[in-house]
Length: 635
Image (cartoon, rainbow, N blue to C red; front, side, top):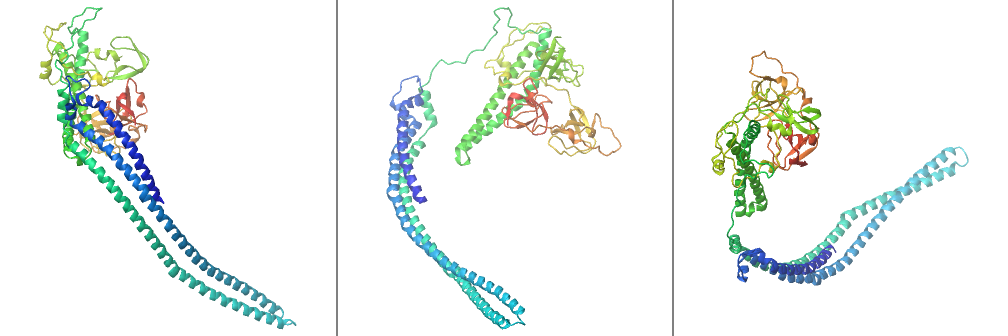
């Protein structure tokens, strides 16, 4: 029945599919007739075209052949469905009716044999019951005989006892015979009758399945015949696809869409304000010069890291491009579309980092064109975003800072607080800076940038240079276009050296293995938790170690002492809530952590409420830090 239902439903599907396929082919043909021109020569070709241009497109020819194959295949499916209904389904129905009677007769024979066996089993049970009753009865007669031993009823009691004993012995013999008969019936049922019935059932099943296989073979023959017709039609489509020539089709499109007169847009230039007169000369008076010097320092702090990321992404894109070529040449390697998407993602990331780098180079070249070698003081403040629960005077403009949403910045070194807008206006003269801002390795702008930036005169106090400032042609977007958050963590002071005085084995991703005598750099000092964050200057590895295991400054020979007890209860703890990176972000300071697209970050208690567009969390290496909140989403 199941096979017949399957065949019947398959026949209905073939007929329905035939109708739908035919309708689909008709609609596709009509749509192709309407849209072929736009696909082949464009919606607005530059010159007239004829039917010969349409026929010359190899992809369109293959598509037309595919539609035709669908149309002619529809009838093949209809014929196959009809054959399934009139031949295969009817044969299966007849087979089912014949074999159903045979199965019923066999089941009746089995039930009869089972009934006869159970009848003998029941006779044994009845004989056992009769024997038990007689045994109990003879015991009753024995007791009566003992009580009547000296009276006139003794003879009668003795006779009754003997008669009951004989009856008990007859019951016993009957019971033993019934046992033998039951055992014989059991052996006959399990060793003779049941195997014979099972063999008969198997013979019936063999006959049924043999007939079923014969009918299914007929079904397969019909399907093979239908598939041969479909295969021939698909061979015609394959031949059309083999003639596909993408460069030829693209050249045809280009030939009909050539338009002369295109040129790259010109550069932007200075546009004065209509309500206030100013020239297009950069101001290098003392106050705006400080602003330029701080922006220059930030740009120099970013450029190396950006270029490193650009080179990495370029290398990744080139490798993936080669992989795409390999997959296109050998489809057995895998899905070329997946590899192509990976290549495009890498290429897009390379373009973004290159644009950021070009914007930084343009910024550096423009500022250097104005300030020359005067890069300002070399003791920068280490400003970080802060909240202020009470009005706090700005260290630069002297007006109040007040707000719980990180309205200002505070220097971690000297404690100076300023508005966020005043950060770049503060001279790099932090009295508590432990290391000066390093001068850039070379004040020479890359030759590609100098060649692309024509000069214009710059005036200002303290300079007599004739320098220029102009946006280069084809200027890349600024970093803000990529939603880069502001930070003042570039050109950090030099890290303090330290020596490990006891071996320590890390027990979590937050910690780092160190050995006695190892030289490290102090990344974050002990904040009262009893732990200090250090880094290996050779490998770049960073992690927590007990503060009592570290000797800051020059190593001193001391008497060996046992290592102090480690309190592991103070290491960074997360909340168990995670976010996932949706963009790449490279940490710009020691209190920040990098974000990678697809990587997970565990949020701290502060989490997404850190403020000013920042969040706080713990990365996969165990480092705790802040990161841009709009670069992640809930995991």
